[in-house]
Image (cartoon, rainbow, N blue to C red):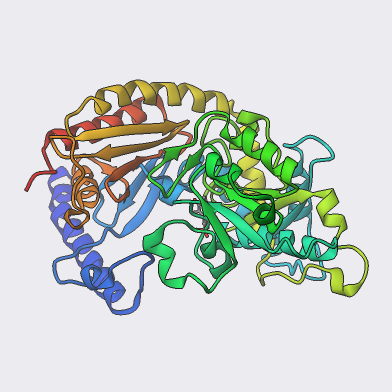
Length: 448
Ligand SMILES: *Cc1c(COP(=O)(O)O)cnc(C)c1O
């Protein structure tokens, strides 16, 4: 092709992309309502949200041809990178065979296979049952309801409350939200959900009297690291000690591994790190490699058995898309990629590299603290004198906006910047993202 002709096209392509983008944004502002979003600001004249139209590995492409490192793993879901061929093919094949099977009354091979594979991660005789649902919140809802109904059916009806940790996050549906300890999200709905006793830590938990612990059905916790709480790590050994407390008190342990599951912390599941098997394990985000909505609640055979017998003992819970075949096919393909590729070993290597890169960042004058667990990092910003910023200055948001210019796309939690790449990230790509954080810090984006 004639070079002059080709170059003559470029401005026209750019103009067309610009025009498409403008139209999409205009329509979005007219009809869409975004999660956790101040819609007034979103719809304001000058606000131009990114319209993402493509993805490839750790990269996302916007509607105007710009490329960004996905430093947030698409809200903590993505495992193998965007556009992974193996997952796409598995989903397409499944959709061609059958695109929906009601798990209420029927069953299908992909779900059967997946349930077996999930249980296979745990010692036989521990987590042997899988209940599918659609997202992290529903995975938690199921665990809560199962725990309560189990109590009712085993003569322990007095155990009708839950214990949850301050600043924890377990999803947004009403039941799951009532276990949430993040005041700015949940306080307005307090009183509408389950009875919950919040504790800060194990010390406070151990301080509960027999009378109070005797009314507890289950404790819910995010193992190793509280995600929405700015990636705050629990002290080493906490999980094993919590398991011991639950055993001593006859309380169920519900592990919310919605974020930590599927390799993010360096082991397949965070609970492996402390040799803990919970009574309920909640999985979602990374279950399908971060491609389709699917969730699973795993539990023990002993708990399941309390639901056998008369009709009134059944677990009356489910969703129209429970165990969706395409989601199950994606999950199976994702698990194959874990097995085929030494992925977890590479995560541990990359996490080591990340730790080295974070040392420099932690030393920056505008960084108060850096927290890391596997390939999950939280970089907490502060003023030059180490002071916290007033919330209304929204420094975390401004930082992430500035980082875009360096090709990094991520989201903050208040003033903590999350760096949580897809697990497939290469050494070079990881350095790119750490560099982008550094450059943004150096720009002094935080002043003014
Ligand atoms: C994201 C998340 C949830 C909620 O999952 P959704 O799929 O968004 O409903 C629950 N618990 C934890 C720890 C999470 O990170």
